[in-house]
Length: 400
Image 1 (cartoon, rainbow, N blue to C red):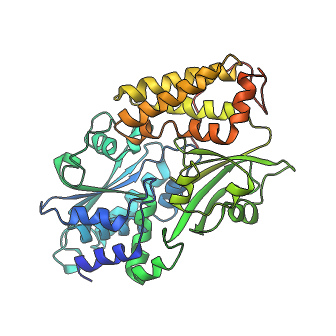
Image 2 (cartoon, rainbow, N blue to C red):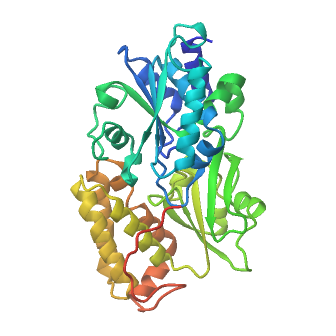
Image 3 (tube, one colour):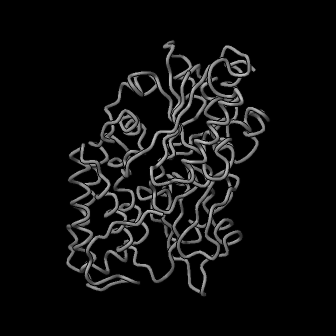
């Protein structure tokens, strides 16, 4: 199969990026393939800083060879000559196993010069992150590889024009690249036959929190949340009722476990319309004892801590949101606080460079949408709901 054929199969598959933005992978690859620069890079994002998400790490621990093959195919299709796998520095097992497989690939002639006797040459290495959540953003990731502080860049220019070390680059998530070898082996039409008409393939989900069988599952897109959480994961243990779901990482949504939401199908656009995001695939389940206000405060505490500080609307907006949520949690909030939070959220969305600020109000807006009565109870009735500590101090949300 020639390079254009490989790119055509990925386009035909309908594969959308699994890192959160859900941009069509074939279109993204096409931007890089069309750049005539002789030096181009493929970057694999395995930073994975979302609390409650461990699917990228799980893949790199169990089957790094598939991801390495996917990166190499991407390099072939895009006419690139070097790949980087960006892994969080504390994930020692994925780092060690990935480096070992890369070394074996060189020994077998699957990486390096003139791969398998062809004129295609491709090198690959592992690059390590620091401990910054924002380094998972694609331009901040490139800054980190270059040895700079992980902060997002202005766009345009986009990475396909000016990326890593000033060269055209393409960034994909681990899960996105892990699908590629099977797409090439079986054909794009095979992959497009799985899932829905809008979202093809499968979703790799991480289920944590108040759930009987936590862990990582792979299911076809189009399956409902109810099927995943109850039929596969056994529902909430100890006879408790499921109250809410936090999806898509700390920048995602807080959904009530209503019949309507449990019947949502796994689909990027369906989740977005419901006020949430499917994102990285992390789903945190909470039972009836959880206070939605306190959970929202905890999410914003994490986002505030992890803001890189480059954009004023994000840096100050997160801090002000946290102050307001602490007041509400401590029964000192007012009705004006709700209006103020919405105004802050609008400014963050309009004035931030990257998704951290643009999506940072999502937890609050979705919690207000589905649990407005609990906010009202804290503000008007001055009473706590569920488990809600009386004195709030904003601890950092624990990573995995």
